[in-house]
Length: 51
Image 1: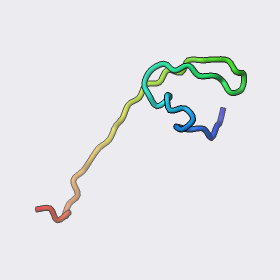
Image 2 (image 1 turned 90 degrees about the vertical axis):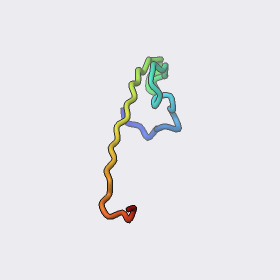
Image 3 (image 1 turned 60 degrees about the vertical axis):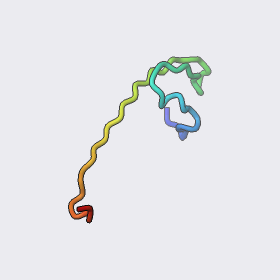
């Protein structure tokens, strides 16, 4: 199912855990289990003028 909904509509899906939601098409409740992880990396810029 495609949708234009996002964080403003369902902020709970961006939080880890089980969330009870309701299907827009049939109205039945369902459980969404969300597992959140983050990853990032940094690198030092050459010639940035600091030292």
